[in-house]
Length: 225
Image (cartoon, rainbow, N blue to C red; front, side, top):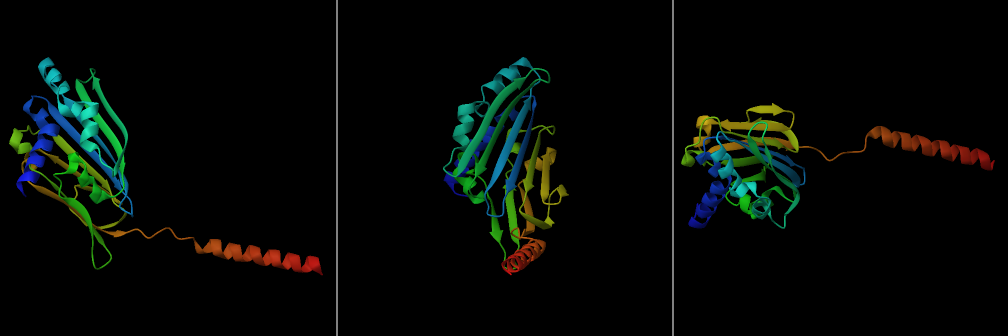
């Protein structure tokens, strides 16, 4: 990794995970849906649970709990932001940040500052399958994160899953969960899948169409006679 990429990585990780300097815990969930043409959508929700009033005030000052800052991080000509939300819930002592957006190509996410450090993508294999992969950086260990912090990645891939290293799978939905010691290591999320076929018109539709045409032709023939 060159110096420029290292600087970008450090910047983004500090922006997103500086909350680990505090005494509370952070839950981060990313849900990504990738379509067959590599377009898709993403929803991200990060939630910080504070312990003291000081933690609460410090969290509110952080970059990733300000709408304008969040918009700047995810701005790209390849991304259409649908919504950004920041709010505080006094009932359970949490502050939340949410963003939802569409993208025109999964690989194009790298053009946004929030993903400029990422090593991810989808490659086409010779046997007609495709391989999804994304590295999870060992950013947490740099900040001395507590074991209660948790990160969840959910991916809906456009095909039948053949191989994967996810923690959970349900059809084409893959879920990776990282916490504790896992967060101190460089991890690789990976899956091989066979792309879904384009939706084809059921044969019964063709048969019914032909049948209806025959009825119409027979009707017209007898009507003329």
